[in-house]
Image (cartoon, rainbow, N blue to C red):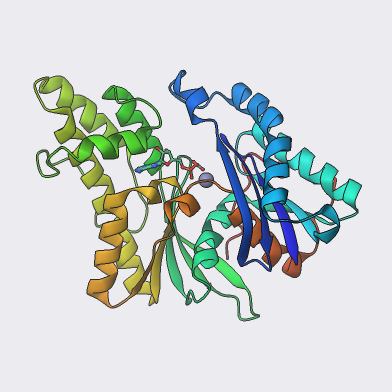
Length: 335
Ligand code: KG4
Ligand code: ZN
């Protein structure tokens, strides 16, 4: 079964063709980052306009690269939420139009479920239960991915952020330090020159359950820099990154132990961070557990993960009605 999938929830315009939820025949991502850099963040109205211009060519490119004609497709999928409503609407409307005009089922996919499935795409042997740390610009979730007993997967929420998302903290601190947008890669570059032990920034909610808090850390960075104007920016960046990674890995590791997870998997844009990737790998080696670290391209927004999820959703729930609306606040279905 071949699925054409579209992803336009934020600032990447993406399309992919995925076979049987596993084989990526093509995956095209057109990033708008350069456009939004001028504004220091994603401007929703600008993002929707660019999706409108880019989506047609991106879909055509994905179909050509997969050597697939519309008549060879079995479904058309799109991210239906969560995300920016204007951006979501472009992808959802286009996918419904393609589906209707080609006589194919439409599948609306939850963006976060897409991130959860990204690891399966690169490692079909993924063993359950697995603890997934999903860290992006909008979310910080610790989830137990487990079998539903009927050949499918279900998600149990273990913890989440009570304030800022991890990526949001990277973006805000980068902006404060004058490092530009997007903040994650900018902090990581700067941190490479710095000393991660230079400043002992607080670990939010350390030792307490599985929830996260990053807004106190951000305030602490601002206070420290104002009180020590001579501090090296690279030391602040490295110490901040260390504080975020430390708390993420410590909690994921403890959660994995408690639920008896066979593996820890990471996903979302922040999972592109080298320090986080290395620390998760080290923790898993030490605990005798597998680490599923998807490629950086699979951690950040893409349509291949949407195509993979669509295949599971179509088999479990059937097609999504064409009347279904994009939902900017769509939640993950949890048990
Ligand atoms: O998943 P994603 O591409 O989009 C959302 O759904 O939010 O994640 C984007 C977030 C941004 O906050 C960005 O700063 C962060 O991921 N990010 C990183 C890195 N690359 C992207 N954070 C830390 N280190 C990175 N290398
Ligand atoms: Zn995302």
